[in-house]
Image 1 (cartoon, helix red, strand yellow):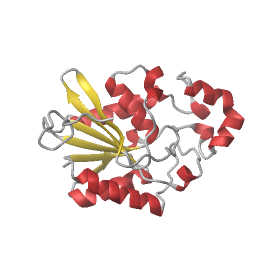
Image 2 (cartoon, one colour):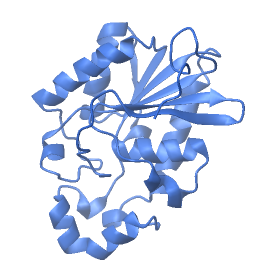
Image 3 (cartoon, helix red, strand yellow):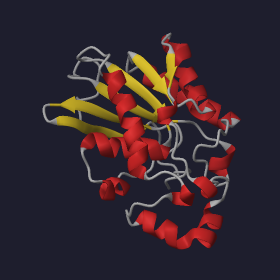
Image 4 (tube, one colour):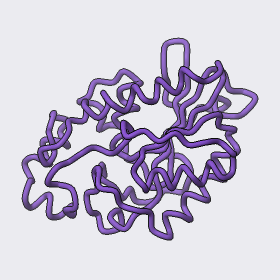
Length: 222
């Protein structure tokens, strides 16, 4: 989804936040729930990050903040190498902690925790695997984004490198959506991004899951 003229360099008005998901990991490919487990990028994931970084560098970012988990930090480093910007790492941008779900495959979660999984997909507040609520993830991640936005000029651009679930809950919170409706925001493909723009009545979603031709979403929130 995009708004013509809102994302170009000279046409933009107000501040922008680009929420960029990390590149592929082996656990993504295995459909294994990562959560806050510190899984590294695959070689393909590094390639994805380098390709996406070339595109994002063209949007002239002013600052980069990233989750301190390796898959996000290493993705952010590719953009830093092109732009000369420093990356600020913040654990508040980590993926949802999901307790005993972490390390399990999608099929294993369905087999062992099917009712819990179904309740989560219905939009009910669920501590997946005994971990965090989605609202708790938004409580820690959205303020990180807003703190860094406040440091920008009135037309500055912030790149936030994080994780699929954390990005979705942060977008939901910044748009003022009810938590039950956050699931309506589709998941992000590895190394794709969403763009929020500052409008007269708050944040608006200008692009979602941008950056590639359609591919399967492989991640914790698929």
